Length: 74
Image (cartoon, rainbow, N blue to C red; front, side, top):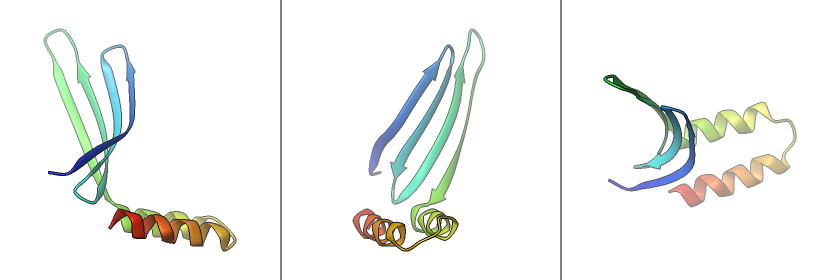
């Protein structure tokens, strides 16, 4: 499994992370308490997410940058 950590944020017993795993963006939230552990993650198709982001931002400069990013993720 190919994995790269992009963002890691820890607050007390909770942990939030954004990773790039097997061509997908993975948002994970976990809790590690005294006697209780829990976690959940959501995988986003990177190309789909980038296309939606490009559509939400007006103009064309961001489209070129995001297109290059899509190419780099492949």
